Length: 305
Length: 279
Image (cartoon, rainbow over all chains, first blue to last red; front, side, top):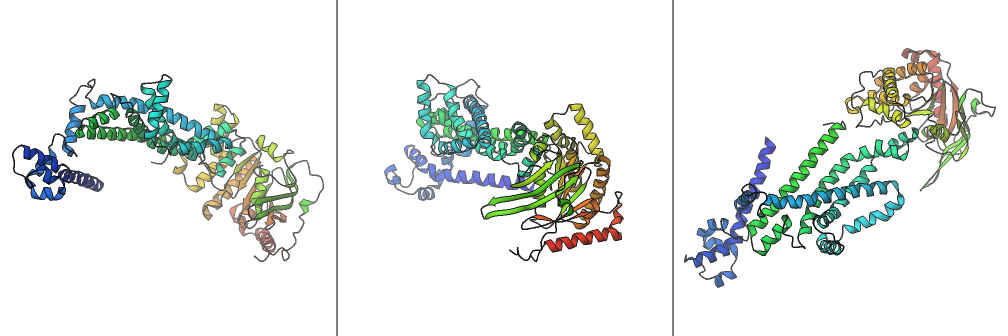
């Protein structure tokens, strides 16, 4: 109960800050509109207002504050505008509609999940190899680290162009970019997890004359589970980012990335923000889902609640 | 380092190079082990010769760094000696390990937290390829042996430290190894629990007729349990004295107040003091 109050307080503070920020951000647009409508504003012309500070304009034209939260194309849309847009484009639109956010989210989601599956599989395989082979440890790990130092926004167009030239398009290029981002946390986490058993545990298996295979399935893999899930949570969020970034350079017509792009072409800030929120909600849902699976798995493994 | 002032090790009788008797299970001759570390070589074992016969309960006692754990690990083929010879069941230690000649109990119970007690005991059985029915049978047998019947379905965290250590002993008993190596298994437990487990261990030893190698820091524990007490001293790790216990096989806890017990304990203490030099 106490923590609920704290959580709600933080949330209220964020929303209050957001509303407050809308006022100076949107004041010039509101005043321009008001001037055109014949309302008296100070200073009277757009030219005079151009170099004035926003806070000063707000203080001289307090009547306009209310209007900064209801503009059609605000620089910064108010929370309720985003909420209304989200509602309209999810609940009130048919899923098949090109204006439905659910439709766009589902396009991005499928690329995300495919990329996540590829990235996780690749990450686990690489980790197993790195843990069992010193050569792989020395030859693969540096490249895995280097791969993450290149900004994905620079790499994504090249991946798409290269794949297109060999005839691969559609969901695959997006999934590849998504996998590219998500395999790394899985490699790092799994390597750490597979190496988690201490010397005594390994000695114990040695006294049983257990082979490498048995050591892997009976000790290393179960030991790595908590590490794996921590990595998967980072990985799935990275996958979503990858899928969205993958939609930007192609001028894709569907997907949350496409929605962001279209919004910025036409100055539809409300649309951009609602697409951003849809992406955030989707990521939160995916991470929460993984958290649930983690709980079930670790529960079955007898971990103390 | 006070090498010069350290008392010369008394050559124990068992170290004489007579041919080993037929029932000799573990035989070490002039065993040497030097670890190469960043600070130069560390002489962990020097000229260790010892025979352990079938059914013996041998304790290794001595201060830290005397090589008692290292010697046990050599028997288990977890360390490789750099000199001398060592045979276990007439084989090299590594062959003996591959033949699953011994069960090893570590200082920490080391149970897998994701397995129940019964599943933990099944671990070696699964690895060694016992049938499911045989696994069940043996788990019940050894759980009864360590007085943990009814706890098979519990997870390790639901058990006390003493119970966990008993479960780890059960795990080492589950397969047919006639040697049991125990590295300070009760070191982390409080005295009352320890007394109880010592009593149980003796009963278990009598019932199973295993050969036991037991590393400890505690003089009463060593004297109470053993048929043979090996007193070791450090830098370099070597055998200082081997005491054959004159106590009867049947040992109630209050035997520890008998003059015989006190006399053996006294000899162990003297040996430890002499071997310790003045550090």
